[in-house]
Image 1: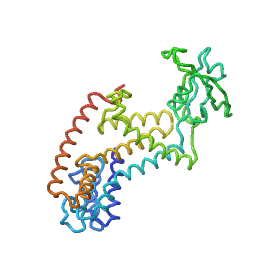
Image 2: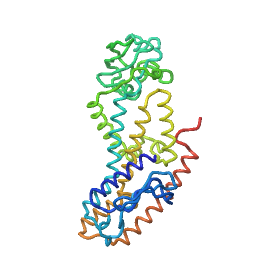
Image 3: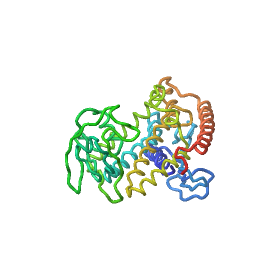
Image 4: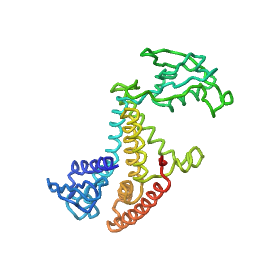
Length: 344
């Protein structure tokens, strides 16, 4: 989590420097300060005792009377600084997923073929590796399941890898009611990940770049759709629940284990990209004390033609911070009592 927060703060820091806004301190970790590492161009670089992320302390953050400070800067400059934190996370997510796709996820392999199944009739064998279905690249079991379920009762063209050779086969997935979902799926195969060092579904730099943009868009739209999906019963409250740094650590640990077992950096890189997107979106929410809350005040200032009194805005952010800290404690307690990743 710390690297993701540092990326966010570096976004703010870089934007402030580009906007000629004076930055008093850039801290690694959270106060109290442990040691002053350096001081350059009026900015103190510090190492702090609480090893969680970092922070940027611009001059005059809430005081427009401070020359060269944040609050005295133009609305455009302040907006630029505020959105650059999330922007840095989004850029990091794109770059991380681009790298992950060039490395490639572990391919999906047939572990067994059920008697009398569509897979057996099509000639699939244990050890076959799925490459594509109806022209859609198979990156994971979810992408294969999606194509199969959408084409129940219709022909599906599969491209598989067998003994180093690409082979094209056709099968017709069974419809619901034509098989027992408790024992097998629509095509009747068991799936596994090849042993470490096996075939990977990698992409070239250009294709990986385009796919990373698509990945970003899918994650952003999915996040925005979560409230409606929860109301419509498409997901459960457990699946939509917010999590704390403890929950994130649990998920990251699971991704690290998956990377270790598969011999691929793809799971941990993908998780890092998703965490960057989540942090960026969360900070843009119009909640006091978050970047989105400060952006809201600037937009109100633009509509009114004058800013809200700094003292009042500062008080709103203080109250918002206290509420957020209380919520954070509750989420940490929840993730300890009811962990995202159950203990083994």
